[in-house]
Each structure stands twice: as C-alpha cells, then as structure tokens.
Length: 228
Image (cartoon, rainbow, N blue to C red; front, top):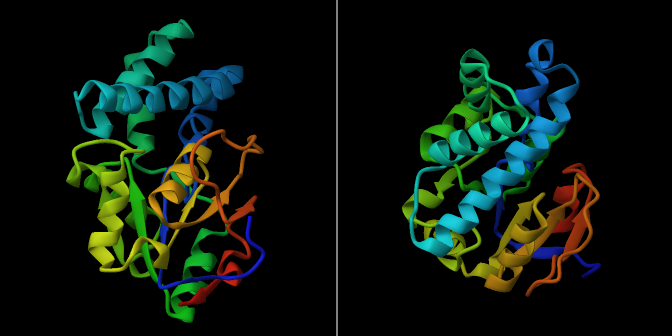
C-alpha cells in the first residue's frame, strides 16, 4: 500500500456498508427479532451478495431490489421466521438505512477541497436516491450511479467504467472507496486508486489488484487525497 496522497479529481463510494449501514434495518426490528438480529443481518447480506455474483455469471440479471428481497426470504426461512409483516417492514427499512456517523462531515470536507463525489452501487437508482435523501446528503453527492446502467453487478469491469464515463476522467484520477474487500480489489484491478474502508476487520483478499490505503472508517479520508 502507498504512503503518499492519492492524486485524483473525483471520489466515488460504494453505498451499502460504506456510506450506509445495512445492519440498521434488522437492528430496527429487535423488538421482533430479539437475539436473531445479528444472524439475520449476516445471512441476508451474504446471500444478497452471492445472488448478485451468481446472476452475473449466469447472465440472468435482476434488479437489486428483487435480489435483496429474495435474499431476505432465504434468510428468514433459514432462521425459521414466518412473518410477512416483518418481511415488509425489513424491506421498507432497507430504503431508509442509516448513514454511518462520519459520512456527512467527510463528504462536506471532500466538497470543500474541490473533489467531485459520487456513489457507484449495485442498488437501483430509486434505492440509492432514497438513501441519499433520507440522510440529507443530496447536496454532497454529485453523481448517483447504478449498475442498472451496465446491466450486470459488481465486480464486472463495465460497472467501474460507469464512473469513468460519467466524470470524463481516466480511472487513475478517480478514488474508489468501499468497505467490501472484493469490491476494493476489483476497482484497483480496473485501474482506479482505491481506499478500502475495512469497517469489519476483514482479511485481505487474494484477488487481482490491491488497495492503495486501508482505513477503518471514513474519518481522515480527505487527508489521503490530493487534487491531481
């Protein structure tokens, strides 16, 4: 990993787990889920990601909202939970996930320093917009880019190309920030500068590419970048 600032012009973020806490949906249903909150969160997320990868390999794309619902159905059934009202509540909460505490200040600082900002997410446009508006970040994020424009999920290279095309910048002038190691490594292999926000203390991936920096939250992120 590099120890010098990354010379870039835009900073693009993954959404789920990086800017927005996917665990906040199940946590808001603790009154029903009790001690199954953590198990549901982990299984729901794991199956959601598996379905994106498998659908991409199969060439059978579906919107992230559908995939998220199917993953939730699998998780609920696995945990022996048969509660349609809870299912509806969890899906609704997925559109209102809470931003991590440092997100707004980090974005404000990036904008103050002159960086363009964006989201590049598996989420559909309406899902991303709901999270951005719900957390009051409309003025802090210049671009909301969805894989739906590419018709395939991350980590297909055409997804990362969306940011290149939108900002009109070469990949090496874009800093990509993700909490997902597989996403961070893929963006690096594509040619972007990468900061891995390793919120969950994961081990490094054995994949092509490598993050330029590894941090545990977005605090201090602006200090890792310089306008290139």
